[in-house]
View 1 (cartoon, rainbow, N blue to C red):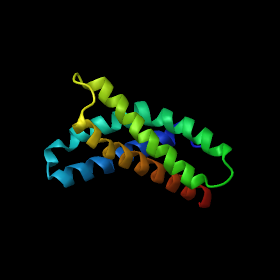
View 2 (cartoon, helix red, strand yellow):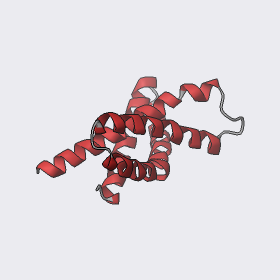
View 3 (cartoon, rainbow, N blue to C red):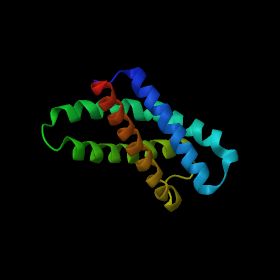
View 4 (tube, rainbow, N blue to C red):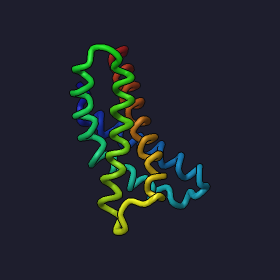
Amino acid sequence: MVKISERVSVGLVTAFIFSIALSAFGNVWEYFWGYFSVTATICLIFGIPFSIVADHLIERIQSYQYIFSVTLYLFGGIVCNVMLFIGLSSTGISSTTINTFVFGVIASLLYLHLLLFGKYFSNNH
């Protein structure tokens, strides 16, 4: 089981990497801290509780754990994105917000793989 402190660390690293990627992709470095604050908030408020629940479900699966993990975290990225838009949007979900679900999926899969890397690293050292 991964400690909460490790989940918070991985969430912040995920937010940092994701914010760098968003800033570089749009060549809008002046928005880096805005991206980081939003991404870190999503990771900490929605992502960490989801990852705790997901890890409990994953531990119960004996085979195909990686495929189940990727599928579950992919779903989690979509759910966290929906929660964000419900909280922030006054107009509801539109075609523009649906396009940004891709960002939630990428961030959740980045979080998963950083978490798996941390588990692997801590078990082998």
